Amino acid sequence: MSKRVFAKTIRTITIPPLLVSTLLVALYFLRPEIYHSASELFAAIVFLAVIPTAAYPLQKLIPKLRDTGREGQRKLAFVMSITGYTAGFIVAMLTDVTNELKFIYGTYLVSVILLIIFNKVLHFRASGHACGVFGPLIHAVYFMGWWWLPPCAIALAAVVWSSLYLTRHTKSELFLGGMSALAAFLFCMII
Image (cartoon, rainbow, N blue to C red):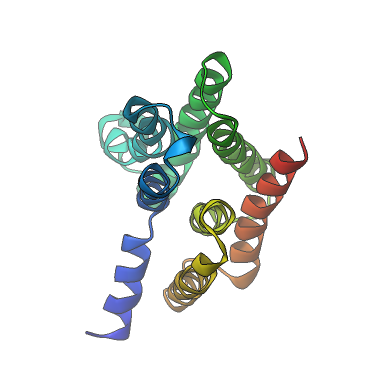
């Protein structure tokens, strides 16, 4: 396998919806007290993974975005992410989910708000991929223990390497994306 194929494979298997789904399922089995029922797991996957992923097939169906390529996907992904994360957060606040699950919804909502501020308001490109990778890794260590740190660090290093190798992002874009996830996590811990 060539380096380029290997780098593309890393970026493909670390797409944020897949990682958040993996986190949510791992928590369901390793920290079952976080959920009252399997329906809460299903709802979390829909709000945090399925709705944001819908940007990719939807782009092909929206005439205005059909021919915009990767940039059109990126814009629609932000819209779908804020839609899914906001809806999930609202549902979590209005229902009897655990504080841990509310915390997860909150960090995802704050992280996408920070990404929008960086990318659209301040015009600093922050990597949504880095944010979407670092967020679940932080949550895995927080909820399931420090022994998750080494594999998470390896996964993060692989994503950074692949993004730089494929010139998808610069170091500063990856840093801003990762710091968006960390800042959202810390903000939600404080409140």
